[in-house]
Image (tube, rainbow, N blue to C red; front, side):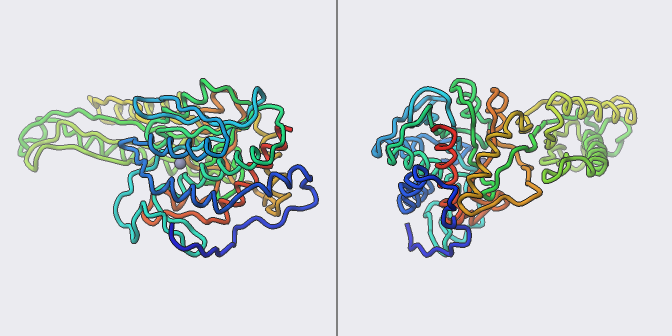
Length: 406
Ligand SMILES: [Zn+2]
């Protein structure tokens, strides 16, 4: 950990009179220095995915919580890749805070060591600082504060630190299906805003098959790259058509082609071209319906280009966060934010990115996304998070736990 000098712009203000004496006791139990140290330790322990080496981070977080009296359990969600379940209190109802342990690979272009956890001007830098070790540290701080305050809960306040969000969400799928929860807060970077609805994500691999011939006689073959290019044009038109769709604060459904690969050489007609297609899915849509739209686009292309030969497979599938039944949870969190001096502004934002919230909602649990950091700086070199936001979110999560469980 390097020198700490806070700018303080996002720091929580003094609690209002709406915060009870019991709640004040919990707020006073929050130790921001300890939370900062935990965040730096988590950043300094790489957990890039791929390859998916979250185990040491899970162990680090477990020993931090256990040393402070919180019961923890590691549960293998994939070989050598454990989820961590921690909780305060017992029985139901259960409020879960969920965060993922993995990060995207550090990548190129950093001006500082991505694992040094440098702290400067009120920000912590490093891969995973924003997405989403800050969210995990805030959730751990909330759990510890409730535990340390000694208040008795009517139910359980829990943390699920899960593996694999950046690739296949094996961790959250297992946690949401097996660990029953009554409410869930996914502490992904939301700019400390409560996000009650958000887009899902479908990725496809599409392979176009052609016929290789000498390119001096292209009419005797079938050029798979040309077929793929015609599909890309169709997808662009479709993106323009969808630009008026969507909900306030969430934005339209979108298509984006991520990778195009094809061809064998300059003088050979390409017999194969693969592309990856990303489709963001609105809360008013579902995954099956959207896959059918993509198949219809390909079928339409087939009528324009007879003999078109394609295969389509799903590679990523996150359902959208529809917001089913999450109004009461959203209200408790927005009230708590107002009570610690951060009233919610209208119109309320939604979420354009997909998160593990989808799996908790799919398991029947009302879920929102609320965490520190700006998702626009996630997955980039010099990723960082403002400490003031970590402090604000720690307090809001702790008070939310108290209000729902006492
Ligand atoms: Zn994330």
